[in-house]
Length: 171
Ligand SMILES: [Mg+2]
Image (cartoon, rainbow, N blue to C red; front, side, top):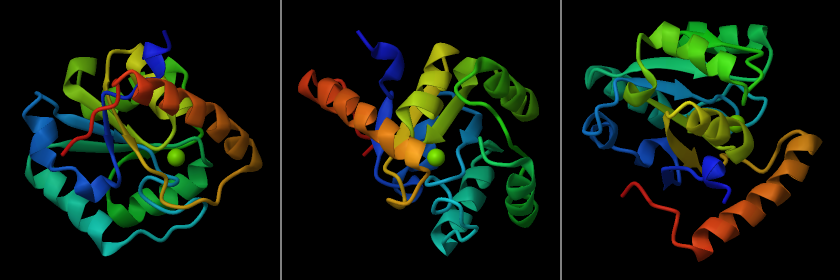
């Protein structure tokens, strides 16, 4: 039960993931969540570590696309600075937004990974389409009040998966 909400792998941070962990699985494109994955919620500050990691991932041949439920304008500001494509107002977890991102990446679901901090949007949306999903620990505790409520459901689900040995680390 609840398998569609279970990430295929879990990591503390983006920078902890070796790009080769993904490429060895035949993955060629990454769908990246923005808030609390690349930047702290509702800020535009990302660490040098994140920037370096994105560069490294590209060097290893991975295509990148940011997919966020945040406003298109905010996403554009960040993607312009990082010089990678991005889609805002995505409406995750609905499939249409993930399909659009895969069009940008030029990848099939089996060649794509989603990296994000939310089970009910990033992980569920990716799993439904057969995309490899990686859950990251949120960068900060700050987020929308509605997201804080959702976190209670997430905690319950994570406990459920943990108790059944369903959570796998990437390292
Ligand atoms: Mg997020």
